[in-house]
Image 1 (tube, rainbow, N blue to C red):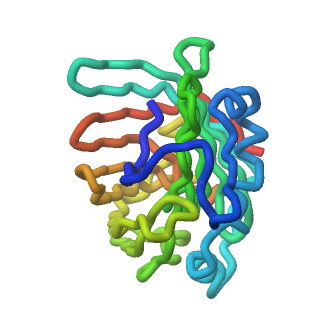
Image 2 (image 1 turned 30 degrees about the vertical axis):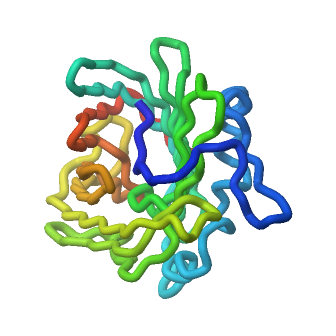
Image 3 (image 1 turned 45 degrees about the horizontal axis):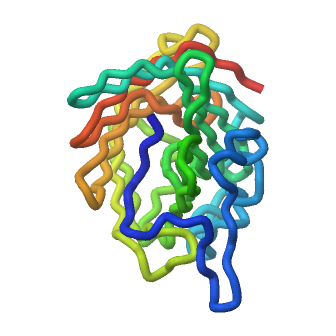
Length: 255
Protein backbone atom coordinates (compact mmCIF):
# COMPACT_ATOMS: atom_id res chain seq x y z
CA UNK A 1 0.00 0.00 0.00
CA UNK A 2 1.51 3.32 -1.02
CA UNK A 3 0.97 5.72 1.86
CA UNK A 4 2.34 9.23 2.39
CA UNK A 5 1.98 12.41 4.40
CA UNK A 6 -1.32 14.13 3.55
CA UNK A 7 -1.49 17.88 2.88
CA UNK A 8 -4.50 20.06 2.15
CA UNK A 9 -4.56 20.93 -1.52
CA UNK A 10 -6.18 20.21 -4.85
CA UNK A 11 -4.91 17.17 -6.76
CA UNK A 12 -4.77 18.12 -10.42
CA UNK A 13 -2.81 17.46 -13.56
CA UNK A 14 -0.73 20.64 -13.41
CA UNK A 15 1.00 22.65 -10.70
CA UNK A 16 0.62 26.41 -11.10
CA UNK A 17 3.93 28.23 -11.38
CA UNK A 18 2.75 31.64 -12.53
CA UNK A 19 -0.08 33.20 -14.47
CA UNK A 20 1.87 32.31 -17.58
CA UNK A 21 1.67 28.55 -17.35
CA UNK A 22 2.05 25.35 -15.38
CA UNK A 23 4.23 22.31 -14.86
CA UNK A 24 2.65 19.14 -16.17
CA UNK A 25 3.05 15.91 -14.23
CA UNK A 26 2.86 12.57 -16.06
CA UNK A 27 -0.38 10.66 -15.74
CA UNK A 28 -0.46 7.50 -13.56
CA UNK A 29 -0.80 5.49 -16.77
CA UNK A 30 2.41 7.00 -18.15
CA UNK A 31 4.27 6.34 -14.88
CA UNK A 32 3.06 2.73 -14.85
CA UNK A 33 4.47 2.21 -18.35
CA UNK A 34 8.04 2.78 -17.14
CA UNK A 35 8.36 3.42 -13.37
CA UNK A 36 12.14 2.86 -13.44
CA UNK A 37 12.66 5.66 -15.97
CA UNK A 38 10.36 7.94 -13.98
CA UNK A 39 12.34 7.28 -10.77
CA UNK A 40 15.57 8.18 -12.56
CA UNK A 41 14.11 11.29 -14.18
CA UNK A 42 14.54 14.95 -13.43
CA UNK A 43 11.72 15.30 -10.89
CA UNK A 44 13.70 13.47 -8.19
CA UNK A 45 17.11 14.88 -9.05
CA UNK A 46 19.12 16.51 -6.22
CA UNK A 47 18.94 19.69 -8.32
CA UNK A 48 15.24 19.95 -7.45
CA UNK A 49 15.92 20.44 -3.72
CA UNK A 50 15.13 23.82 -2.21
CA UNK A 51 18.25 25.97 -1.80
CA UNK A 52 18.15 26.04 2.00
CA UNK A 53 17.65 22.26 2.14
CA UNK A 54 20.50 21.65 -0.31
CA UNK A 55 22.85 23.75 1.85
CA UNK A 56 22.06 21.62 4.91
CA UNK A 57 22.93 18.50 2.92
CA UNK A 58 26.14 19.81 1.34
CA UNK A 59 27.67 21.81 4.21
CA UNK A 60 30.39 20.15 6.27
CA UNK A 61 32.01 16.82 5.50
CA UNK A 62 31.06 14.85 2.41
CA UNK A 63 29.05 11.68 3.08
CA UNK A 64 30.06 8.67 0.97
CA UNK A 65 27.73 5.69 0.60
CA UNK A 66 29.16 2.27 -0.22
CA UNK A 67 26.88 1.15 -3.07
CA UNK A 68 25.76 2.17 -6.55
CA UNK A 69 22.31 0.60 -6.37
CA UNK A 70 20.48 -1.70 -3.97
CA UNK A 71 17.37 -3.69 -4.85
CA UNK A 72 15.45 -4.82 -1.78
CA UNK A 73 12.36 -7.00 -2.23
CA UNK A 74 9.89 -7.24 0.65
CA UNK A 75 6.93 -9.32 1.69
CA UNK A 76 4.85 -6.57 3.25
CA UNK A 77 1.96 -7.33 5.61
CA UNK A 78 -0.51 -4.43 5.71
CA UNK A 79 -2.97 -4.45 8.62
CA UNK A 80 -5.89 -2.10 9.29
CA UNK A 81 -9.48 -2.49 10.50
CA UNK A 82 -11.40 -4.44 7.87
CA UNK A 83 -8.34 -5.15 5.74
CA UNK A 84 -5.34 -7.45 5.97
CA UNK A 85 -3.28 -7.47 2.81
CA UNK A 86 -0.08 -9.22 1.76
CA UNK A 87 1.90 -7.26 -0.81
CA UNK A 88 5.23 -7.69 -2.59
CA UNK A 89 7.25 -4.47 -2.71
CA UNK A 90 10.33 -4.04 -4.90
CA UNK A 91 12.47 -1.18 -3.63
CA UNK A 92 15.37 0.33 -5.55
CA UNK A 93 17.83 2.66 -3.85
CA UNK A 94 20.28 4.56 -6.04
CA UNK A 95 23.29 6.44 -4.66
CA UNK A 96 23.02 10.06 -5.83
CA UNK A 97 26.07 11.42 -4.01
CA UNK A 98 26.79 13.05 -0.62
CA UNK A 99 24.29 10.92 1.29
CA UNK A 100 21.42 11.49 -1.13
CA UNK A 101 19.47 8.43 -2.26
CA UNK A 102 16.83 8.13 -4.96
CA UNK A 103 14.32 5.55 -3.80
CA UNK A 104 11.48 3.92 -5.71
CA UNK A 105 9.01 1.32 -4.49
CA UNK A 106 6.68 -0.65 -6.71
CA UNK A 107 3.77 -2.51 -5.11
CA UNK A 108 2.50 -5.85 -6.45
CA UNK A 109 -0.41 -8.21 -5.87
CA UNK A 110 1.02 -11.40 -7.33
CA UNK A 111 2.61 -10.35 -10.62
CA UNK A 112 0.36 -7.29 -11.06
CA UNK A 113 1.81 -3.92 -10.07
CA UNK A 114 -0.78 -1.42 -8.87
CA UNK A 115 1.07 1.48 -7.25
CA UNK A 116 4.47 3.08 -6.83
CA UNK A 117 6.24 5.53 -4.58
CA UNK A 118 9.17 7.75 -5.49
CA UNK A 119 11.38 9.85 -3.28
CA UNK A 120 14.69 11.56 -2.81
CA UNK A 121 16.01 11.03 0.70
CA UNK A 122 18.99 11.52 2.94
CA UNK A 123 20.59 8.07 3.56
CA UNK A 124 17.22 6.44 2.85
CA UNK A 125 15.89 7.85 6.12
CA UNK A 126 14.88 11.51 5.84
CA UNK A 127 12.46 12.04 2.94
CA UNK A 128 13.19 15.29 1.11
CA UNK A 129 10.90 14.99 -1.91
CA UNK A 130 8.21 12.36 -2.55
CA UNK A 131 5.26 11.25 -4.64
CA UNK A 132 2.89 8.28 -4.45
CA UNK A 133 1.17 7.05 -7.61
CA UNK A 134 -1.77 4.65 -7.81
CA UNK A 135 -1.92 3.36 -11.35
CA UNK A 136 -5.72 3.29 -11.59
CA UNK A 137 -6.08 6.97 -10.66
CA UNK A 138 -7.01 9.41 -13.42
CA UNK A 139 -4.96 12.40 -12.25
CA UNK A 140 -1.41 12.36 -10.85
CA UNK A 141 -0.79 13.04 -7.20
CA UNK A 142 1.29 16.09 -6.43
CA UNK A 143 4.87 16.03 -5.25
CA UNK A 144 5.62 16.86 -1.61
CA UNK A 145 8.93 18.35 -0.56
CA UNK A 146 10.76 19.71 2.45
CA UNK A 147 10.82 23.49 2.12
CA UNK A 148 13.42 24.12 4.82
CA UNK A 149 15.23 22.60 7.77
CA UNK A 150 15.67 24.57 10.97
CA UNK A 151 17.38 21.56 12.55
CA UNK A 152 19.16 18.85 10.57
CA UNK A 153 21.34 16.19 12.24
CA UNK A 154 23.76 15.31 9.44
CA UNK A 155 25.60 13.16 12.03
CA UNK A 156 22.94 10.49 11.49
CA UNK A 157 25.02 9.30 8.52
CA UNK A 158 27.64 8.13 11.05
CA UNK A 159 24.98 6.51 13.21
CA UNK A 160 25.85 5.91 16.88
CA UNK A 161 24.11 3.49 19.25
CA UNK A 162 21.41 4.71 21.68
CA UNK A 163 21.37 8.26 20.29
CA UNK A 164 18.55 10.63 19.37
CA UNK A 165 18.52 12.53 16.06
CA UNK A 166 16.04 15.36 15.47
CA UNK A 167 14.98 16.97 12.19
CA UNK A 168 12.74 20.05 12.16
CA UNK A 169 11.50 22.35 9.45
CA UNK A 170 8.53 22.67 7.13
CA UNK A 171 7.11 20.63 4.29
CA UNK A 172 4.56 21.32 1.59
CA UNK A 173 3.45 20.74 -1.98
CA UNK A 174 5.98 21.43 -4.70
CA UNK A 175 5.66 24.93 -6.19
CA UNK A 176 2.96 25.97 -3.69
CA UNK A 177 5.00 27.62 -0.89
CA UNK A 178 1.91 29.01 0.86
CA UNK A 179 0.69 25.48 1.64
CA UNK A 180 3.18 24.28 4.26
CA UNK A 181 3.04 22.29 7.48
CA UNK A 182 5.59 22.06 10.29
CA UNK A 183 7.84 19.01 10.16
CA UNK A 184 9.36 17.28 13.18
CA UNK A 185 10.97 13.86 13.00
CA UNK A 186 12.64 12.32 16.06
CA UNK A 187 14.72 9.18 15.56
CA UNK A 188 16.27 6.98 18.26
CA UNK A 189 18.92 4.37 17.49
CA UNK A 190 19.25 0.99 19.19
CA UNK A 191 22.22 -1.36 19.43
CA UNK A 192 24.28 -3.09 16.77
CA UNK A 193 23.50 -6.61 15.47
CA UNK A 194 24.61 -8.71 12.45
CA UNK A 195 22.89 -7.47 9.28
CA UNK A 196 22.69 -11.03 7.94
CA UNK A 197 19.93 -11.66 10.47
CA UNK A 198 17.74 -9.50 8.17
CA UNK A 199 18.82 -11.39 5.04
CA UNK A 200 21.84 -13.70 4.57
CA UNK A 201 23.56 -11.71 1.79
CA UNK A 202 23.55 -8.35 3.62
CA UNK A 203 27.09 -7.50 4.70
CA UNK A 204 28.31 -5.98 7.96
CA UNK A 205 26.33 -4.80 10.95
CA UNK A 206 22.91 -3.19 11.29
CA UNK A 207 21.36 -0.97 13.90
CA UNK A 208 17.65 -0.29 14.33
CA UNK A 209 16.39 3.27 14.16
CA UNK A 210 12.86 4.20 15.27
CA UNK A 211 11.50 7.51 13.96
CA UNK A 212 8.36 9.35 15.08
CA UNK A 213 6.67 11.98 12.93
CA UNK A 214 3.61 14.05 13.78
CA UNK A 215 1.21 14.35 10.84
CA UNK A 216 -1.70 16.65 10.13
CA UNK A 217 -4.10 13.71 10.60
CA UNK A 218 -2.26 11.76 13.34
CA UNK A 219 1.18 10.29 13.70
CA UNK A 220 3.60 7.90 12.04
CA UNK A 221 6.22 5.65 13.61
CA UNK A 222 8.69 3.93 11.30
CA UNK A 223 11.41 1.45 12.19
CA UNK A 224 14.43 1.19 9.95
CA UNK A 225 17.59 -0.88 9.86
CA UNK A 226 20.67 1.22 9.18
CA UNK A 227 23.10 -0.97 7.22
CA UNK A 228 26.57 0.17 8.23
CA UNK A 229 28.45 -1.48 5.36
CA UNK A 230 26.35 0.40 2.78
CA UNK A 231 25.62 3.57 4.80
CA UNK A 232 21.88 3.50 4.16
CA UNK A 233 18.64 2.81 6.05
CA UNK A 234 15.94 0.36 4.89
CA UNK A 235 12.37 0.20 6.18
CA UNK A 236 11.26 -2.64 8.49
CA UNK A 237 7.97 -1.44 10.00
CA UNK A 238 5.49 1.43 9.72
CA UNK A 239 2.59 2.33 11.99
CA UNK A 240 0.06 5.16 12.07
CA UNK A 241 -3.24 5.67 13.87
CA UNK A 242 -4.89 4.01 10.82
CA UNK A 243 -2.68 1.05 9.86
CA UNK A 244 0.40 -1.06 10.59
CA UNK A 245 2.85 -2.56 8.11
CA UNK A 246 5.51 -5.22 8.67
CA UNK A 247 8.23 -5.25 5.99
CA UNK A 248 10.20 -8.54 5.74
CA UNK A 249 13.16 -8.67 3.36
CA UNK A 250 12.82 -11.57 0.92
CA UNK A 251 15.64 -10.63 -1.48
CA UNK A 252 18.64 -8.29 -1.36
CA UNK A 253 20.91 -7.37 -4.28
CA UNK A 254 23.79 -4.87 -4.17
CA UNK A 255 25.64 -3.25 -7.06
